[in-house]
Amino acid sequence: MIKKAILARFEAKPGKEKEVENFLTSALPLAEKEPETIHWFALKLGTSTFGIFDTFHDDHGRKVHLNGPIAAALMANASELLAHPPIIEEVELLAVK
Image 1 (spheres, rainbow, N blue to C red):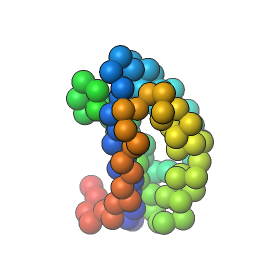
Image 2: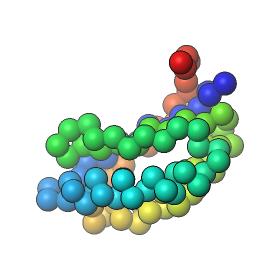
Image 3: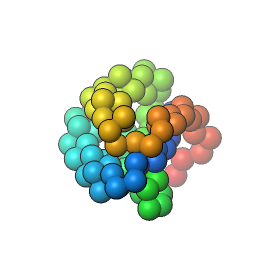
Image 4: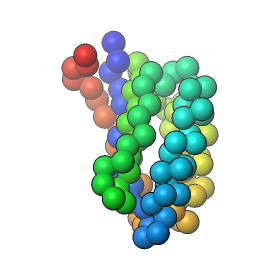
């Protein structure tokens, strides 16, 4: 059963919205190479608000993802693209369909 998830939310700097969107869509191939990441969603929540939601079977898979190339690239580009540091929440899934 899928029990663990990550919900990351971030706000693009004014004028950087398209660059954040492009960053997220370009990260899909990296997510596809992560066998322990079950689902990976790049989200546009508003004009300048974005997010990532991903799921894992266990804490190990979640930790591997948090230390992986997508998180590293996001943090490396955060000061250029984001208005504030990303909010990254480790989520416990109660029910999954």
